[in-house]
Image 1 (tube, each protein chain N blue to C red):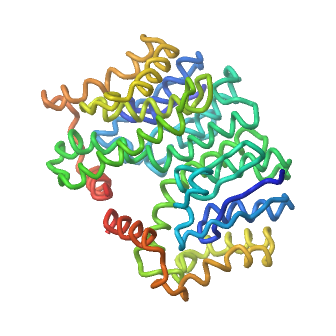
Image 2 (cartoon, one colour):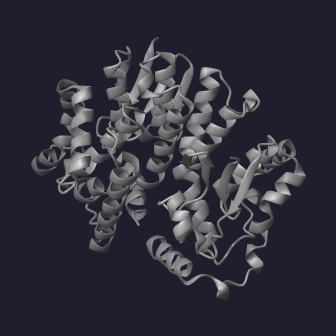
Image 3 (cartoon, rainbow over the protein chains, first blue to last red):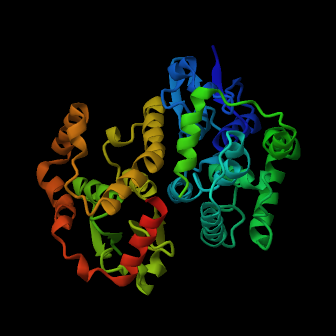
Amino acid sequence: MGLELYLNLLSQPSRAVYIFAKKNGIPFELRTVDIIKGQHRSKEFFQINSLQKVPVLKDGDFILTESSAILIYLSCKYQTADHWYPSDLQARARVHEYLGWHADCIRGTFGVPMWVQVLGPLIGVQVPEEKVERNRTAIDQALQWLENKFLGDRLFLAGQQVTLADLMALEELMQPVAVGYELFKGRPRLAAWRERVEAFLGAELCQEAHSLILSILEQAAKKTLPTPLPEVYPTMLLRIARIP
Amino acid sequence: MALELYMDLLSAPCRAVYIFSKKHDIRFNFQFVDLLKGHHHSKEYIDINPLRKLPSLKDGKFILTESVAILYYLCRKYSAPSHWYPPDLHVRASVDEFMAWQHTAFQLPMKKIVWLKPMAANYNVFLSSSKLAEWRMRVELNIGSGLFKEAHDRLMQLADWDFSTLDPMVTQKICEFREKYL
């Protein structure tokens, strides 16, 4: 059995892994996990990942979670082009520096609008306006740091070439974009960065990876989204409750 | 120009960097940035790290933030024994996996315990699991009890600290934090 990737293209870190594998011609079996329905909470998936999250990599008997670890693993095992995860000490440190900050300040924050506008309403929960505003402020602050500290006057977030950092960042930013947040408005440098990353990845691959998330509002309006199973309600409620 | 490490040992990521550096006899200048006095908001420190967080590393002109990035950098630059970050693909991936997971699963909850339960420095998380307690002992033995105690001294004294002398900006930040998470 070859490489298996357990993913869902609605999930930001899943998309980063998917795009990386596809861009680098890494052969894999796609195992889609329906996270809205709640497949990640099933007994079968628990055997794959007891933390019940995606993405997950399964390479023979070796199972790996956490998108940044998966990306690094793939880049090393399949010896992808150096720019993705540079071998130079300082250049590599910059990638790790971004990934650390991303885990604290981007992850968790940029997913909230999706919960507010699509996933909460799906189970009849409305997130208080105060929390929505707080999240908006947090997003603005994070974008400021992204643009000023990490991008600066460089072409990409960790240097002059595309790295894993750019992929992780782009996919997180796509999440609020998909529910109508105009993140790039008034941020020309960030907008230009986004265009460069997407140009590098290629329009076709971007379309393939983003079409599901970009159609989420339409699906919600038409009521064609899957119905969450009862067993997934508690985790969804908990996730919403944890929104600061 | 010696390596500079900007830290306050109240902060867990700072302690990790401190312990690692001392354990491997890495020569560095300990630039104490007093969190309780709000020194991370000083102009001098903002020049080093505009994000105003600790730890930061300065190696000549190269400035690096984020404890995981700093640990990896030190590990490689100072050729720490390979068990710290093993070269085997699978084992290294497992380390990367934990380092990624600990950000969201660990750091925020631990911060909440310290700042939201009134200065609960005496909250013993190891009481709930003997497996964790045993692991902790193994790590402490590996690091060396002397270095371990040295690194945790300031944190252990936190409960006795006079919080009326806290810098107003720091008090404000703690209140904002409480507002978000309570």
